[in-house]
Amino acid sequence: MGRGDKKSKKGKRSIGSYGVSRNRAAIKARLKRAASKPEAAVAAVAEEKPKAKRVVRKKEAAAE
Image (cartoon, helix red, strand yellow):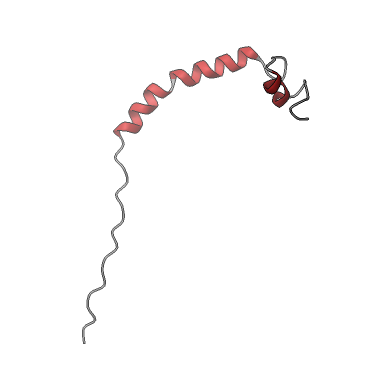
């Protein structure tokens, strides 16, 4: 099973063909769902504040 195998997904991708293991309708449906999601996801990510960085306290001079 590799690039030359006409029945595997990897082989179909390399050849550029479709079939049972690489269904064109399923690929298009997945891409359509992915294209509709980022609009809301990008807006939600943009609203989030970045995490505050932890500040390391400097040690006080040793009391002698």
